[in-house]
Length: 169
View (tube, helix red, strand yellow):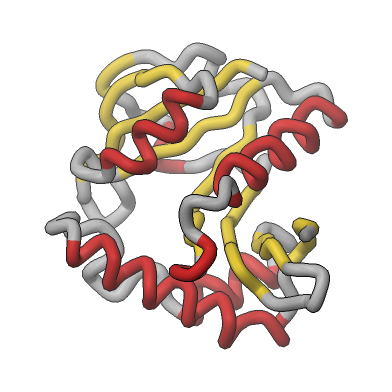
């Protein structure tokens, strides 16, 4: 198993994983990802920007996906709370993380976070920020277990409330 940058050849597999994640969130009565986001256009843009990653098996099967960047997240500029590292500093951001249904509970999200932490360390970047839906207890539990701290509330560019977390690497 390895993590790599996504290519346009991965889009259909990424979208299958994202659609499955949307169904899972809906089954949990979480309205995150239920309004047409993320979509193919977003994934294509992530790939174009070199910010889309996939986890693949030794047989090159795509089993997980995430967007990871060190570009500033505009919606993080205003927070009802406080970031641990100043917003003007360089930081990493994770969005759109999803695991293929058959591979959930195998530690793939933790694997991706550790890989992103290593990339940040290699570039002397000291924090990783993430936001999630207030009802997405699974993601909240994972990131807290990984040492992330709750920092406050942000609002997406489409106006939805999200809980913001940060880990100082």
